[in-house]
Amino acid sequence: MITLRGLTKRYGEKTVVDGLTCVVAPGSVTGFLGPNGSGKSTTMRLTVGLDRPTAGSVLVNGKPYAELKHPLREVGALLEAKALHPGRSAGRHLLAMARSNGIPAARVEEVLATVGLTDVAGKRAGQFSLGMGQRLGIAGALLGDPGVLMFDEPVNGLDPDGVRWVRQLMRSLAEEGRTVFVSSHLMSEMQLTADHLVVIGKGKLLADAPVDEFIAGNSLSSVSVRVPTPVERDTLARHLLTRGAAVEPGAADELVVTGAGVGEVGDLAHELGVRLHGLGERTASLEQAYMELTASSVEYGVTA
Ligand SMILES: Nc1ncnc2c1ncn2[C@@H]1O[C@H](COP(=O)(O)OP(=O)(O)OP(=O)(O)O)[C@@H](O)[C@H]1O
Figure 1 (cartoon, rainbow, N blue to C red):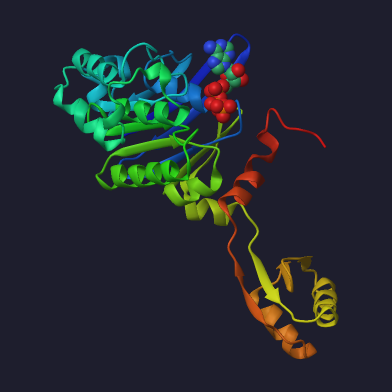
Figure 2 (cartoon, rainbow, N blue to C red):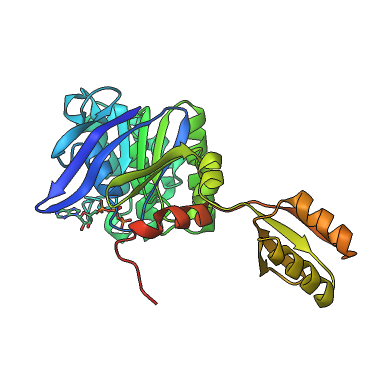
């Protein structure tokens, strides 16, 4: 479990992490979302003692990182800036990490196999591709078999196979009862991977909710209606507009309606003698919900 209590970090005048309070619970994947520069990496760095909070605290299994006796056995992290010795092989790099944390050497073989790097264990890390480097970073996080895992943009640089592998790995780690805290900018991937979300903007907590609840609470539900001819589409659209609904063209013969339910749209079509080739709720995506919520928190937005 990771517990943040009023966690705050300032660099000079700038407050990068601003009073974050939340609990990242075991047994589920918690997605950590926020626009560029919102403080996600800083929060993760504070969690593993790479930086000190200006105020508040962050605890791993109830203790500050510095008080953990065997840190790698309690929390494993893949962070963005990897301090890899480029001339050292993947195997030796992991072995050095294992030695300094009292982890048996045999565990190195296991994690290399888990991340699919067994065949290149003797290769120098400096020659690794971006994706191989990510796999090595994940191996390092798993080395101590910790109950808490943190991954900062783990799918960065991975091919579609690798992305799927990371998703399955996160899911299985959570199913084993571990705490999995993962940041990503890939909303569709997060929607598939995460159970719960913590969303921040400009260092402040914007949301802390299960994925379904987050999507439902931050997006307008809409209705998709398929009408075969332009004349009928126009008739239905005009009548919906007079009832205060909003109508937008969708794909091909589809209209996307907000502000009216499925029943209302169906009944109206029936009254008007408009034929329907499809009618149903449209589920909003995590991306839509996220954009709604963070629109005002984007620090480096582009103005059109
Ligand atoms: N050591 C530091 N000194 C000064 N400012 C810093 C330092 N580390 C981070 N920052 C600033 O803190 C802010 C938050 O950065 P952080 O990397 O935590 O954001 P992030 O949410 O991880 O962003 P991204 O999604 O782009 O990775 C940025 O404006 C960054 O410039």
